[in-house]
Structures are given as C-alpha cells and as structure tokens.
Image 1 (cartoon, helix red, strand yellow):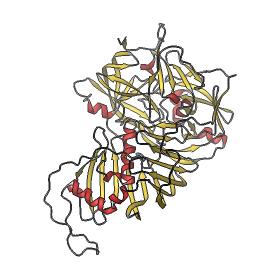
Image 2 (cartoon, helix red, strand yellow):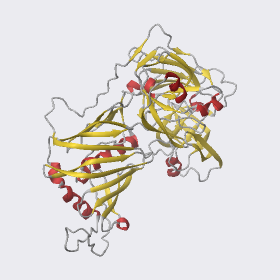
Image 3 (cartoon, rainbow, N blue to C red):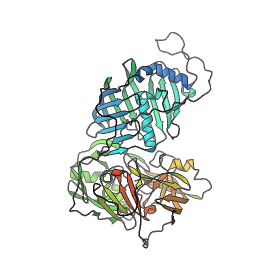
Image 4 (cartoon, helix red, strand yellow):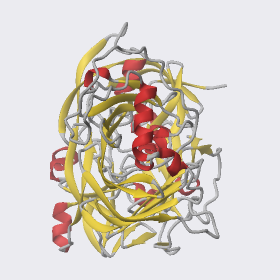
Length: 561
C-alpha cells in the first residue's frame, strides 16, 4: 500500500541474494589513461612495485587473471555450489546452479523457502507464499546484474555492463570501478582486491534503494576461483549469508533445470456453496475493509489491497491465536522501513477461498485505528489475489473472488499486466510519457503519486505550480509536493487535470525507477477492475452510466479513440 496517507506497504520478501545471469554485449568505457604513480603493495608476496591500472579494461584484465575467468567460462556443463544459508532470519540449505551461457537457479530449503532462476530469457521466482512469479522492469535488471557478479560472468566479453575506472577510490589495497547497465537505470560500484584480483564488493542501485554484495573465502575449482562466502544486504540493510562448502561440475539433466515452473500450488480451494461476493465495509479513508478467517476465527477487519505484496496479520491478532513468530523481514512503506516477521497459521479464508498454511507478514497495525475507525486485524493482498480472479468496483465498493479455473470474462477485453514487485502494473501515459503504473486499490483516497525518479527525469517540479505536502505510512511521514498533472491515459480513457502527489528523492517505497507512479482508488472509479493474476492479465471494464457517489469529485475524462 504505497500512498500519500498512512498505510502499510508490501514487505521486502525477495531473497537477499537475488541472482540472475545474462550474456549480452560488453562495451568497455573508453576512459582516458590517467598518469599515476605505480603502487607498492604492502603484501610480503611482492618485492617490487606493481603498477595500478590506468583504464577500466586493465582493471578487468587484473580481475580476469585473479579468478582465471577463461577456465571458468570453459565449464560448459555448468557448476553446482552447495552449502548453507541464513535468509530472512532463518538457517537453511542452499544450492546454486549456473551455466557459462547465463542460466542460473538458486534454491534455499528452509522454513521460508526461496527459489529464483533465469532460463536465458525469463527471470522468475517462487515466492515465500508458494506462488511463482516473473520478475520485470528494474527488478529483473537488478537481479540479472547481481547474478553476473555472483557467478563471475561480469568478466565475460559478452557482459551487458559498461565500466569506468574510479581513480579517486583506487588505492594500494583496492581497484575501484563504476558500472552501468545501458538502457536501464541500474548502476553501482565495484571493489577489487589489488593483490589477488578477487572481487570483494559490489553495490547495485537504480531500482528501489541500494543493495550490496560482499565476496570472500575464494576456493579453486577446475583451475578457476569462486567465492564460497557471499553476503548480500538488501535495500533495507537485511543481510543474507551463503556459505558454500561444495563446488562441482553440474550433472546431465533430463529436463531444462532453469525453465520456469509457473503452475499454481495446490494449497488452496474454492467452496462453490459460498458466494463470490465479499461483504465490504467502507472506512472513513475509503479503504475497503473485509472479514477474513484465520484458523477459522473471525479476528475482525482486514484491508483489501492490490498494493500489498503479502498478506499481513497484526501482532495483536497473532497473539490472540498464539501463533509462533518465524524469521524476520523488512516492511517498507512510504515513510521508510520497519522490522516485521512471519506467521504461518493453519488456514486463511476469504469468502469462498481457503488457503492452507499461508505465510503472512506480522506487523503492528494498531496505528491504523485512528484513520480506519476500527481495529485492523490484517491486510489481504498478493497471496489471495494470485490464487483467484478478483472483480473490484471502486465506485460502488464491491469485491468478488472467483475460481481462476472457471472464471469467464463477461464483458470488456483482457490487458496484459506485470506483477512488478507483486503489484499489478499496466502501461499508460502521463503527459505524453509512456511507462508502467502500479495499480493500488489500497491508496483509496489518492488519484496518483508520481515516483521520485519520474519527477526528476521529466522535471515535473519546473514550470508547474506546486505546494508543500506530506506522505505517510510505515516508517512515518516524509515531505512531498503536490500539483496538477495535465493528462493521464489509462484503461482506454484520458483523465485531465489530475491532482497528484509528487514524490521527492529518498529511500522510501516511492523511490521506484521501474514505474512512473502509483495509481490510487480515486482514478480507478470509472472502471470495474478484473484482476487475473494467474494469467498476468486484467480488464478495465467500463462502468454503466450512473451518477457518481456524492463525495466523489472525479477529474474530467474522455474516451480514447
């Protein structure tokens, strides 16, 4: 729930080691040769001065020799690394399989399992909820970049990265580089040990926040060197540690081990005797509140929210059920990030849908009562939506949940969506600029929040009358601007003169370079929304002509030709 009012957002539940691999072109920046005094390393292994690199190409050559990259690239069958991990605060077993052509799969077996993979085209994962999902936009780009560094493929002549030497931060002990991934906002910094040539640290920025990966304890395999200890800190600073003890050549597989497996889990069922219509209570904030049963018990009101990346359960409700806390997870909101954890009750029931042993994020939701008028027991989001077809009418405030195996669209047309960061994202235009927008029904009283990178890229604070504003949610309140956007094109309609919140640069959920902005419930009122997450599609069904609610003041709209 990313919005300009006080709400909770999706957790950062992706694995800290978000790996993927890609092979593309490898342009090396033509940085000018910079005259420098040869460096004299303090290591006792050397008896004479060793000159430092003067170009990025020379630095990369040192790194290639350091791990003997040509030997690594010759492992045509692939490499398997096995060991242990600490991810999401839980110990587990880890395995990494990758091929020199770019494919990879990493799997963590633990109380909260993790799987991420790349088959040469598609970056995909199996979330902690058991749902498979395809990564997209900057999320995909950052995972591909992190995989290149984890597996050594950043040194391939076919890498998709461009490098420059960072002379200012190069010293006797380290060689520093910066890199970019052309065509994307992804960039970062690289630290290489100047004596061994081993990669020590890399940062990945340009998506949402900045990640860091550290590499130590290199071991030799087939004359090449690979890091056995990898520690990645995600955007919220939460570390995931991998300790690989075994390295071997990959076996011969009967099926492609990297190919996406996108079938739904068998952990849910629909009761045909229960109505598909969900009773909705409208909160003072215009949020949709519904009842859900956890372990068969009515715990109170839950917010129904397409902007929630996981189901959430309040700590008060969990304590009532005496549920065990499992692991930990950062929960990122408009105002920053707070610490959460997981609960795994026996069941979750919403209308006709029951999910067995769901994984829910635990967080204190007591602060929402002053805005919602009632105690909030939790939030219903990605886990329920990804197992159903949801029909949402923001105008008359109705919700239906249908079995995806039997649902037929009665009117309208399907439109492809991305499940970017576990949120539905659809193409649209903002003042002529085309891109993706997140659709967030939990931003109930908002028209649109434009993300900070788009505000900066399109200079939206210039030549526009703006006022001081604030955004709030998990992590507190942060400053923003507000102003009028001339046009938004979405779902076959053009909206004119839209009141918008303009996010400012920061480390919050609105610092997302992958999408232009977050569309709230107010802008979605002209449509009946049909979300089919299992098929990655939705329909903007035009509403029948009828008077708008008395409290609604929609902007002018006109149908696109």
